[in-house]
Image 1 (spheres, rainbow, N blue to C red):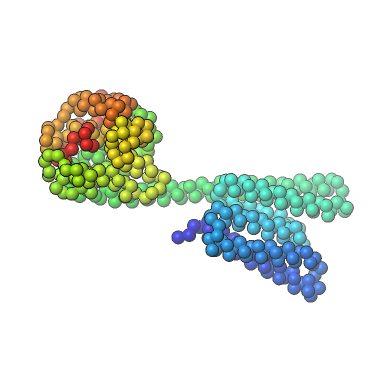
Image 2 (image 1 turned 90 degrees about the horizontal axis):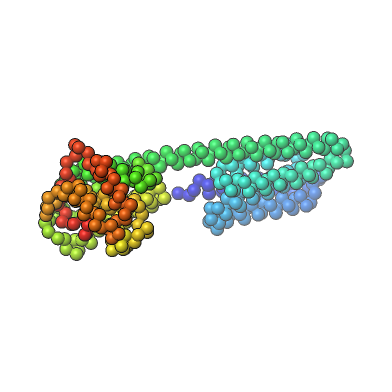
Length: 394
């Protein structure tokens, strides 16, 4: 679907080209019939302007220009048309300044601050030229005081028009942002519902409890607060939900298998890192979520997967997710061992400082455990039968 900006630009160029053509033909007809004292140069300039507009319109329709250039050409062409009409004023209309105000209102809807400032400035200059020409024509018949009053009047009109256009620009920009935010919230809710619908399936498939989702959420939220992260609540909930549901990619027998996984099976386990990338749209709003899940098995010493990132190259959110996953796996019973006590799990994780996890992330986990945020009193241990040691294989 083509952008509304492109369609709007095409409409402007088509209307301007049509008006210029009609204007040129009318002037030419009037001159040929001697019905109006029309200068030959005016007819030529109008005809040339209409030809230029039609060429730009055709090039725009054939996608010769990209979006930004098309908008700039539309702004330039419209200003050129208005300036020509105001300069020659073939119909003798005194209040031609209104055309420039209309122009300012039109460009205010493009919602590009840089473009608005540039073309409003160009409009002001063109308007100044028109006013100077008007003063030059009236200089012989008007007093100095009358000319000054006229200049102030014209300047006040243009400044008022610019202020009005700026108000429209600000309001339309806020309105657009509000609409986009509402659409983004609606999209996030739909995605969250889709992921949440898979939770019961994963529970039965993996023989684990959905309580793990809330446990990880509370744990990560406390750690991120200690690390002064600016991650939003909806991002965090989406991360923990996707992390839990990503196990749906694993074959059913994985969760009943005892002992070590084969190399092929281990490669299949790694695939869950890409679940968010496959599920979420490739948009900036979801970038941190995608990166968090994609890199949460990276290790600071570069021995992790899938890209062997090191140190600060690993996103903080990925480190927090990775250590939370590791901690929950340790304090949950496995088929090959019982449940590890919280302090013992923390001690084992501390041994990985500088190899698997960064020091500040481990200390954030320690602080969270000390505050009792790692597990609510009503939550039960989370069973898991996947035969992977959390600190060795992820």
